Length: 105
Image (cartoon, rainbow, N blue to C red):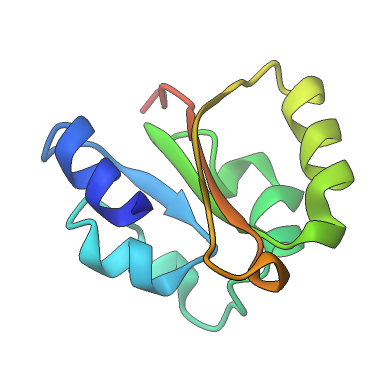
């Protein structure tokens, strides 16, 4: 699954931004929990400001079907390309997409 892929295919020092707490925690990658406090982990909130994701190495997002169009616009606007996608067992639950951002710190 996506969490395992992040652990197996990124360096231990890699950082991620995610709207999925499970992946953020179990991937064992650098995640800014302090900035996530008080946030809802919603896709809109994560993507709305570049400071939420631009300085990380990877963006790992859970997408529901009704968010696909918004996601494609976001990728095109920011010249990003998905590395991997992991479908859920249930079509209603959507998928997880992984994008290399290449954060500049």
